[in-house]
Length: 356
Image (cartoon, rainbow, N blue to C red; front, side):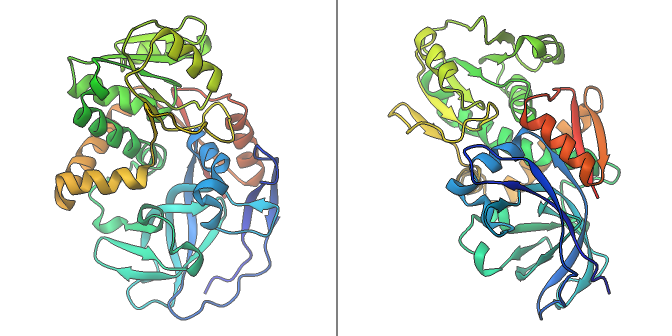
């Protein structure tokens, strides 16, 4: 029965941007309550997606997932864990789960509903959060899971679902009335997934990725976007819709001036802004949990699962040709990896998977 202390990484969330990470060795784990489950966190991905969680932690409730005493916050991360101790009748030791975990060596869940496919966390502080953040998929019954791909799943899966949902949104709205879509932060994995889906399934749509000069050659070489522009040479296309992963207001102002958009869809904050501007009438703030509900209603639960699983597995397979996965281990290495992400030193053809 495992009751060792937990090593975790937290951020100072008192300022407008996440502060430095600190390593914390918790007190020895308390005995489990009835109905609870203790898990060893096997691995989790680190990307600009985690930075967005930190930047929007107060606004969207991400700090409530794994609460810490002020001023600290635990940045959630997607990956895999193994049950090491269970006092829940429907969850056994040795079972593996995919879901959203703390950046820590272990975690405790209090499952509520459980079925053959997933379990749903029911801790009081988390009940108000969207179901997508409280759902943990049982690896043995997971349609997306493929043995030998867990590191790539940890990187691609949490990001690609947003790509998938945006592709469906663009398809339903015909690119919000235009025939051109501009995708900012095109080197991010979510933007790359969206570009891949649009190029594969919507050949009549003009898709332009915008990235830094440093990443332009790498993004263009992948062939996921029909065109690749840079922030220093923005496209000027009347009526283009913008899918924005950056949260960079000066950039968006320049794009509005050059390419008055039919629609602006705000998705992420890769450029480190703490809050997006109040949406104007011609824009929306994309929130994945709400989009999941809409697409599941459109396709039906089984249709949604089948479509998402097929597309995700295809993209994971293609990633073997262009994506190198860097494994980092230990609190110090994870802190260094976070610093690289926080200050924009990522690489579109590399990804980070962490473990303690």
